[in-house]
Length: 93
Image: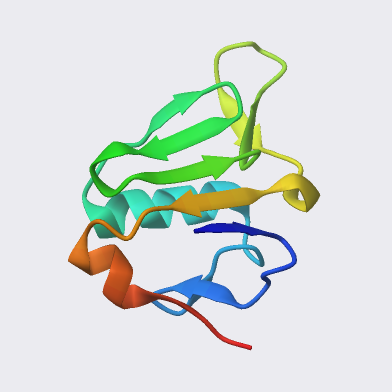
């Protein structure tokens, strides 16, 4: 599954992935999935769930921390490999 900002209704546990602050989405997913994501440049990966978030973050000016990425470029990729993700991620039109 791939989705970008045009899939505005995609949500996880009633939190809209493309409508909220990207950093808040990442924090919520990390807590909900009980997994610390792997972050490299503009990619965020929840490896156990095969969830990939692209352009949700960018490296801050300090070169060490991350800030919200350009929300117009956000892309979600996920493989329905874990029951929790498959049952709770749905699209609302």
